[in-house]
Amino acid sequence: MGVVAALTRQVQLWDTVKCRRVRTMGGHRMRVGTLAWCAHRSVVSSGGRDRLILNRDVRAPNDFYAELRGHKSEVRDVAVGAALSLHGDSPTLTVPTNSYPTRCS
Image (cartoon, rainbow, N blue to C red; front, side, top):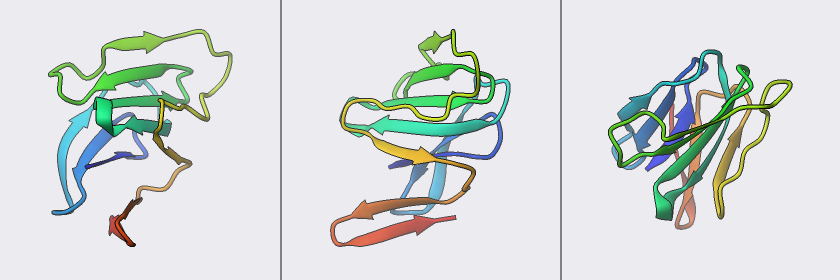
């Protein structure tokens, strides 16, 4: 599985083996710019231009379980434990698996 910020206010969960979107999660009011994923806990954190950090459990039906406020500007970086972090405006996710990268666009 992989996660990607979709250049919108959404976070997408992808099956990287089948290269297909599994779920789309909302919650941000402006563009999502950074993600961190702790796969062994099924937790995704997202930060955006709306100055929010949203914590998500991808197993739960709700789009997020915690909203962290207080940043004075756009959230540019988030981290969750041993996380795969994605930054910037790219709609492409590259996930290292075994000895070769899997790429879904």
